[in-house]
Amino acid sequence: AQSVTQLGSHVSVSEGALVLLRCNYSSSVPPYLFWYVQYPNQGLQLLLKYTSAATLVKGINGFEAEFKKSETSFHLTKPSAHMSDAAEYFCAVSDSRSGSARQLTFGSGTQLTVLP
Amino acid sequence: NAGVTQTPKFRVLKTGQSMTLLCAQDMNHEYMYWYRQDPGMGLRLIHYSVGEGTTAKGEVPDGYNVSRLKKQNFLLGLESAAPSQTSVYFCASRGSSGRAREQFFGPGTRLTVL
Image (cartoon, rainbow over all chains, first blue to last red; front, side, top):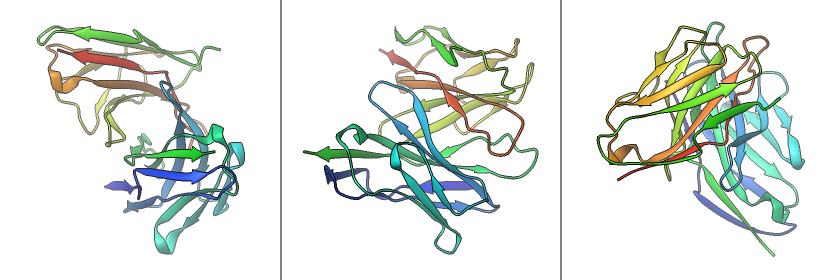
């Protein structure tokens, strides 16, 4: 069984400040990990993914995340927030085993507000 | 390419009515998924398909049925709608080659059951 916990359902940062969105996972097998972003009234868009290669993953729009096996974490960061980053962010985990249907298990989401 | 499309975008039903949501993808993907999104709960998997003619239950399958008669289409049916099925429904698809191929999401269908 897999699960994802996102700490903080709402995060507010000032424009230009560091963005840190937390994600911890639980998985009995080596996982694949994803961060998706959802803008209002839209579907989900992939920001970045971890596939057991490099532990520091860079994504779109200046976001990056680091896989830390010892902490079972995959936190999302961005050095300098922009107004356009305001959205809801979802962390997700899937089974990495061959033959798996790779269905995603999502966290409950973090709403990011960027203050001017 | 249109990617993943969903029909309709909005729908209001009365309790007990039935309806079908259509998901279509033009990327020749093997895998397709239906999720529902509720406030504070993220997305939860309803049903999924690993190929044409196959379907399987996800985390919250009760009250829903699905069919995958054509590779590009994945239908989600509600036989007798209930207010608890008020939600936003997302379809997604994924290719089968390569590791950790990402899921591509449609724009969603907002369903209200009165």
